[in-house]
Image (cartoon, rainbow, N blue to C red; front, side):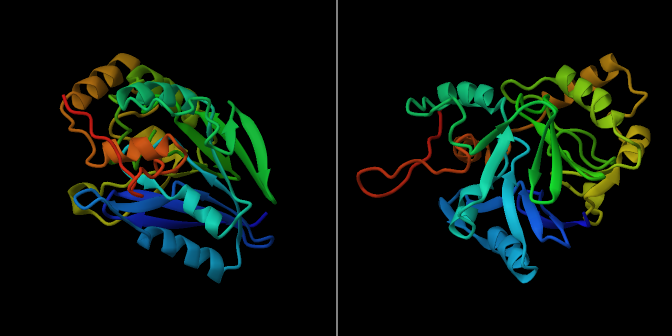
Length: 285
């Protein structure tokens, strides 16, 4: 396998999407794709999607899976749109997505939501290994940011979603329903940091602190030594205190409400109503 990784950055949500592919066989997977959404107008557009599609086409790649690291709270997934171009592509996520569906079906009073995860094509279990053509992939759970967060290990590269960011940005927040700073500490220190130190980490977001240039790739060794919130030497209580105190000061992501409603459905929009239009809910408190 000759593994290559191409990144795509959405500056509106600071999201990284990746295409991991074998240059020899042309087998590929797409990780965490974005569907552009303007909250003020309710308009969806496909600029981010088209960049990925153009790359797949220009390199004659065959994508087998859309791999979601979790149900994102800051962007809408374009996973279902890929099926118009690649009818056999499957959308996969960790099996604990059912817990997230159960939580948010109550939040949004989504009485018709199936909370067994069947909107996704494949639910992945802890340490499950599977193939996308010649690509060999291992999934492992890294809860904390959400209960259903997970990482994908492909060759010497691991895609960590929102569990951990570049060393100068730290870790994901843990204040969403079902989130847990203690779980995140365990996920990072006992799973991600147990990988070989030269394992490449590809992060799910880059917020470019102090206005620096985009960065998205680091290593397990660098994170263990340099992560500003959680190194290999950071004590559990120190991290829990920091993470819980910091999370208490954070505001909700601007696309939280629309994103969750779509993403727990595997990227499916709500069904059209009698006037032919689709609607997302905004809970008022």
